[in-house]
Length: 108
Image (cartoon, rainbow, N blue to C red; front, side):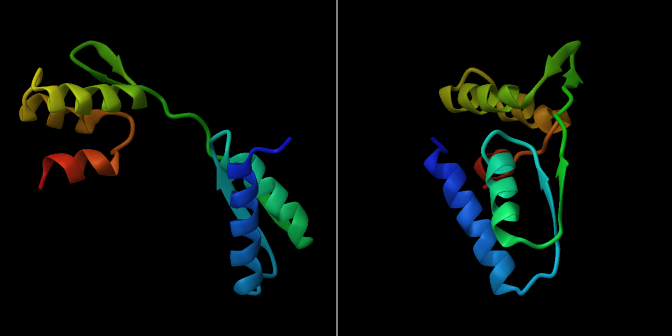
């Protein structure tokens, strides 16, 4: 059975492409939900399409430690709990991905 979230992604993909009267589509996916959703949406459209895997996020490095996307969640949680200060949290800008909620929650 196809997960509901993947089906919603496929429906959304198809709706946008048909609504814009696209003649072809290129999709860059990278997670377990948007990849099958985009591929299913492309199959439903019956137009030329290319799917490109976006790849994995390589870890960053800070103070001799590998930093992954999970490190961002941990750092935000530690900041919320008061175990690290704002300066240590902002060091995480050197993490592999600049996550929007880091800026949103800290720079307000």
